[in-house]
Image 1 (cartoon, rainbow, N blue to C red):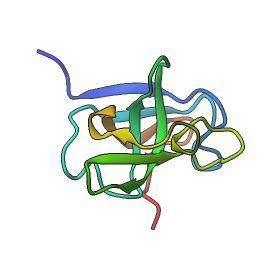
Image 2: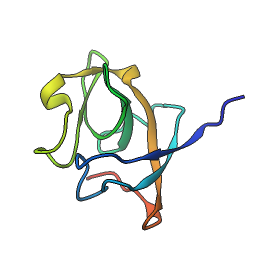
Image 3: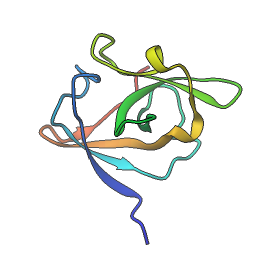
Length: 108
């Protein structure tokens, strides 16, 4: 049995100021329709890279997704890689566990 929740460590500056390097997150690893709502902070599998934390910026009609880091100058995301297949989204960030516990809210 696999657990649907996983702890993920933020690495790098791509999500600053919302999330910072070293933040620990609780991630729901069973993607659903709710996971793919624009503005959600999600975990994506990027080609030839480890899992990355990004914000879902757009869902295209053909089923591809556009993800961006909140820090455009410190993020490798769809601005560099283009749209990703929808199944690249592997989870949705639910909570920040450490250092400041709390919900990670979607952007409006």
